[in-house]
Image (cartoon, rainbow, N blue to C red; front, side, top):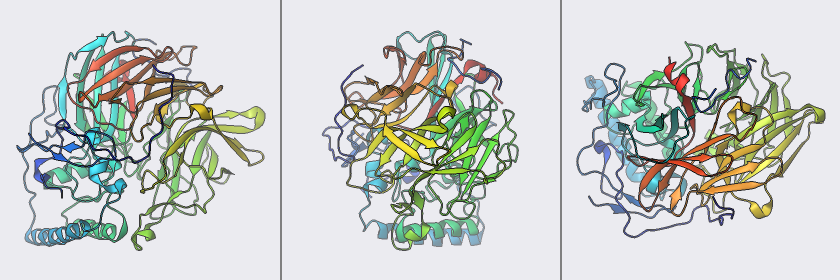
Length: 612
C-alpha cells in the first residue's frame, strides 16, 4: 500500500521499448500476417461460505509493443452444448460454408470490393483511437482460450469465506484487425478463477456470440466494428458491404451483432455476459470451473431489444433494472425491469431529442437515475467523413429521475447538470430531508476522448452530484481534495448497499491512462483516500469488492479481487486484498496472461450449484 499520488501523465504518451518479450496472441491463423498491414438480506451477496520472432511497433499504451503471431496454424477450441464436458473441449477444424452459385459469386465480388476498400483505407493514417497497433498493444492484446487448470500456486492464504467463482469480462479479438479497431470492439472473453477450500483454478473462454461463430466459420472478420471502423465514408461503405452480405445470405445478422464483452451479472440463476449492442448471452460455469456459452438469452421471449451492459440488481427486492438505447430510430431510450424470476415489465419509452450514449445509470431505493449527457450519436456525421459519436457542446447535460414502478415517462423529473459526462455511475441514494437524490460518479473530460482522438489529457474526477427534485436545480463537487486528485475509473461500492447511502467506494487508479496502477478506497463523506498500488511495472483493472458476508454491520468488511499483470516478468495473477486494512492476503499465480479488461462479478458457491 502507498500513500502518495501517481503523477498524471499525458493521455496518449508514445513509448517504444527495446528487447520486448514475445507475446502469444489469440488471433486465428486464418487471418495473420507478419506485414505491417423486500426480502431482508435474501439477495445480499458475500464471499460464499459465510451467510519465435516479433514485429516491433510504436505503442501509446506504454506496454511491451510486440505483436507475436504464431508460425503454426492455431485452431481455436469450439465449445458446444453437445461436446462440452469437464475435460478439454475438442478442437473443431475450419470448414468452408456451403453456398449456392449465386452466393459464391456474390461473396467473391464483395470480397473484391472489400479488398479495394482496405487498400484505400491504408492510404489514410488511423487516429490512435482506431489504430490496432495502439489499441491492442502490450497487455491489451488478445490471448487464446485456456482450458481449466487446477491447483494453481498460491502465495499467502485465501480467506476461508471466499468460496465461488470470480469472473471478469473483456475484449479479445479472435482475428487480427484488417482496418480500424478500438479496444472496445474485441470479441468477448471471460476469465474465471474458481476459489474453493483455499485452492484455485483458472480458465478463459470466448463468449460464443452469433457474430463470433459466423466469423469463425468464415475464417476472418466480417462484421463491422462499431467504433474502430464505422466512421467517415469508409464506415458507410463497410455498412453497405455488411448489409449486402446479409442480403445474399453470406452473413446472418438477424440474431444480433454484439460481442458481449463488457458487463457480467448473475441473475435468475444465470450468468449473463453483456454489451449494449445486443441481448445478453448466458454462460454456464461447469463443475471444474470451465465455461460454456449456452446462448443468447431473451428472458423466454420477453426481451426483444438490446440491453445496456450495466443493469442494476436491487439488493433487497432482487429485481433487475435495465435500459435499452437505439441510435437509429425512436424511441431512442427504453426502461424496463425484471422480477427475481425473470419476468420482464412492459417497456417505458423515455422521449429524447437525439440518440445519446448511455453506458450506465443508477438506482436508488425508489427511483432510477438516467443520465442524458453530451456524447451523442449523429450518423449523418459519417457523410462528412467524421465519427458518428460526437461531443455536442451545445447540449445541456441532465439527469432524469423516474420511479421504479413507472409505467410511462410522464412523471419523469429532469434536472440540468451543466458540462457533466459520467461514463460510469458508482451509486445513488435519496436524502428526503433535502428533497435530493445524490449521485456518485466519475466526471470525465474531454467527454468523447475514449472514442475520438484528442490532444487534451483525460481527467476522471470522482464527484458528488446533488439533484433537487423540488427546485429542479443541481450542484456538483469533487469528493477528493485537489492535492490528492487522481483519475478514478472502474470500480464499485458494496453491492449489498447499492441504491442506499454508502460511505466507501473502491475505484481503479487509472494512471498512467489508460493503465491501472492500483486502486483507491475513498471515504465519500470525508474525501479521505487510501491507495493500494500493485508495484513497479504492475497494472490491473477493475477492483471487485466482495463482502465477507451479507449481514455485516461494517460496510467495508470484505476483500478486493483484481487481476494484475507484471509487464516486466510478463506474468499475471489474481490478488486478494483485505478491504479494511488494504493488506495483501493472497496471490493466485495464473498459468497464462490475462489482458486488461472490463467488468466482473462473483458467483458464490451456492449460486454456482444452482445455475439454470
